[in-house]
Image (tube, rainbow, N blue to C red; front, side, top):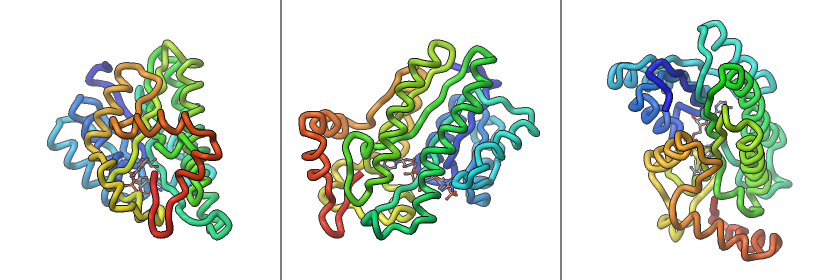
Length: 262
Ligand SMILES: NC(=O)c1ccc[n+]([C@@H]2O[C@H](COP(=O)([O-])OP(=O)(O)OC[C@H]3O[C@@H](n4cnc5c(N)ncnc54)[C@H](OP(=O)(O)O)[C@@H]3O)[C@@H](O)[C@H]2O)c1
């Protein structure tokens, strides 16, 4: 557990899971850099965290879906003299649509955010952590990583990348820097709206609260685990997808019209 002078960077801190992760880090007396594009939301959260937890919370509003996003964030932190001991790579969105109909610019932005910026931030801050001799990185993946998902094909593949990348880094950077992949399933956040995603009512039973998922992720992070799937039902789903062939798993995860799954 880091001491009270530790800083964490939380990407995607303006909404959903990122807000809960930032709050719970602040509860643990860790200073936070909050980043996303929505500056107003970030400023509101920073004020609340400063007030309620007596920690420093600073805001860096920027877009991580553009090629220089990660380097821009690094530059802003250098100017502030902040070297984070914890990196929470949480920002992300999905694209729920038949692949051939997806907007190419949006597809590129999603891959840039969900994969490229996540990799670049892990390298930038991972190097600093290694030089300092300690650090922790949380990568937010998804249950979509555990099987191919038609109509969410590129998003599910991006999250499969995150899972594989994080599991490899966990071994490569140990013991000084720990890397943990958090795999959430369905949560009520801004995700559905951002991704054009509609959840079938029958899947409500799978939903977890973002605050609970944040706690599961942070507990795994501070325990130095390589990964954690949030929720018992999700664990069963991940296991059962291993019993099917990849083709059968892809067919089984094909959402019916107007329905979808994550
Ligand atoms: N909700 C689910 O059912 C679910 C399930 C599995 C995995 N996940 C994963 O959980 C993570 C958090 O998502 P969430 O559910 O909390 O959704 P959310 O409420 O939509 O939050 C997404 C966060 O990412 C930020 N973001 C989006 N585009 C960005 C950009 N171009 N540059 C910088 N930041 C950007 C958003 O902030 P701005 O819009 O202000 O930039 C927001 O803070 C994502 O990686 C998602 O894939 C979600």
